[in-house]
Image (tube, rainbow, N blue to C red):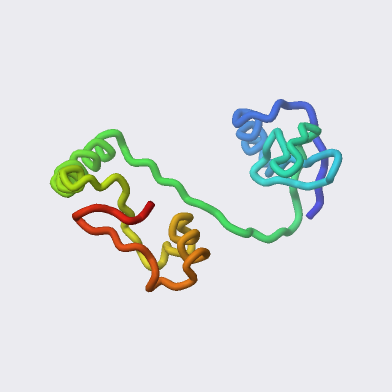
Length: 141
């Protein structure tokens, strides 16, 4: 990956967008360590150093991950909250009556990425030893 340092703009979302509008994919580089970050950031998360500079990225690289974010209209979001309230308030009311303070809906494909479940697996080593939550209370914590 070829990199060219540029230092004339502050590290803001507006600067990043301006570079994108110019057809430039930008990252930031720690001047002391040479570590490059995409998306760019004004502070190195490992060293907490602020000796950062913009760097234009070009050539070939490897995409490690990406996220697509879709934001619904205000009406869709409001309708979603109304539907959530309609469906889940009866359940949450029973939880409240039973003194449940914490509950977790576990999806098998998400267990590897769930911090609480990961801690339980680390401590207990076996899914069969995971605590069970019931309507009478919760043994999660």
